[in-house]
Image (cartoon, rainbow, N blue to C red):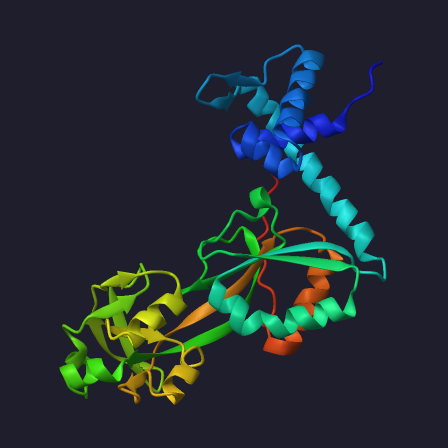
Length: 312
């Protein structure tokens, strides 16, 4: 009996998930030529074609898809078992991969990361900046921080709410001189604004109660809060930002808080993680430190799913 090359099977799963050999090789952390060779060996061993290949695309065959649906959960279970075995060790090591928006990383994670890295010299941390919620499984992230105006809609991940980010309204002194000091939210109607791509209106709250809404059509739309802040300093528009982010600029007189009696709806920051049965040691220690530094609430786990008779 021929030896079963389980690595070939795992590479096959990654190629399916990546939608092709280039991305699949990246996910499997092997050269593209190795991924192609692994799939070719597997096809030869099984005597079936797993992928349809053209000059433009690679598509999994029907039989390949059925095999993937049976095999992929087994590898996920093996990774969980490996994580459990590693978590019982007193030494926390390996690579912890984190995705986070720039503002969350710069303002809220630095202290936690410093404490974890000092406590565990064998641990390495990779922090990628992203404003979008990544596919944690496909891209191999252990944790992903996301910001939202509302709540989480995807319940397939375990999650913790990390922090609420208060927001106020700011403008350059020159813009205020040109437009006049606003005294009510309605006075901002028609002002040039700088916003998030999803901004259609801004809410104005007093003592946590919404008092008014003002429609906005931002001149500049970007996820990058620092870019919005610098554009506001240049007088290009009024901006909604965290007071903590702009405290130095306000102190130096580059920005002025307008309508200081009002706040806006806070941004909610969540940390997401794959809904594993077992939590890797590196994730556990980081979340423990995060809870100490930020006061993270309890984990919300996805609702239990009924066991299905067929593979998903």
